[in-house]
Image (cartoon, rainbow over all chains, first blue to last red; front, side, top):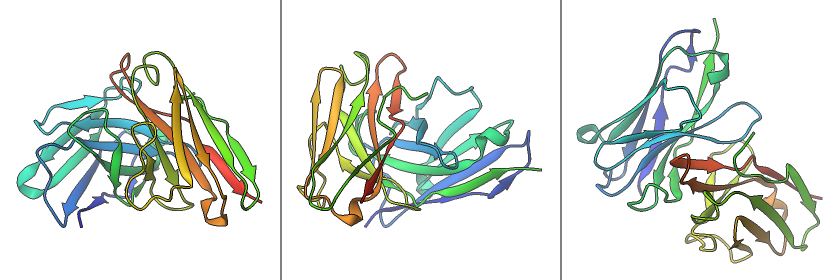
Length: 121
Length: 110
């Protein structure tokens, strides 16, 4: 059974850089699936951050500042999220999620358990 | 403010049927399929409905989805206490070239 697991620092200082990794276990990243990052601020709704295609091309939420970078390392079965110049508004639970098929607009059929990131000095 | 609009909350009694609406635009729901996610308290979201009305394996047929023009609905029949959760609609938006979510609807089972 394929599973996703996020990992990251938990606490990041304001203006610092956040780096998160999503590790795929129980299987490999399919060459067809899109891999997504979604975040959820405390007590609020879900926000799509972006995705990376099976070809390694990222696509980001244009409503967010261009501070995000998504990358994939197929040899490690991992994909990553990097966020520069963090502020308190970036405090959230960050989820990685797999697209169901080979299409960017596909539903997210597999989610990680989420990792809590707090931005604070 | 979310691109897709959902009511913040709804409620029902056990056995009742409830519906949750999701309103979008011509570039989102009007042009693409709608997906629904269920988020139980303290857990990650779970895919509930995809492609407007398809249920993943393991999702009870008490859950159903529909779409018309720029709106979609999630219906839950035979409401159970374990259905108490937050529900989110989502769709691709051609104008934004990305996924948009609704603000979420909190379902309370009275």
